[in-house]
Length: 105
Image (cartoon, rainbow, N blue to C red; front, side, top):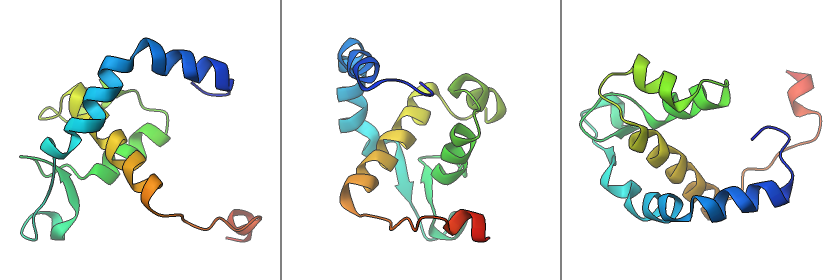
């Protein structure tokens, strides 16, 4: 939904509300933290695929279907759960973004 207008996003959520609502409530069933797996990083339950890897792929423009094809233990619902987890984190804390910081790196 690159460059999507707010109205378009609202229509997407309204159209997909059952999926959105279910994923937002069920992501904890698909996300796990185990100190003995991936150094305690948040992973998709039952795998060693870190949620950050899924999110990095999505941020790079890789589709959910391509991620599932690249990581066979994952399902589309796992990818959705990773996004729901990230959305939940974004609501819980604010990460300061300093203007121009990216260009200084």
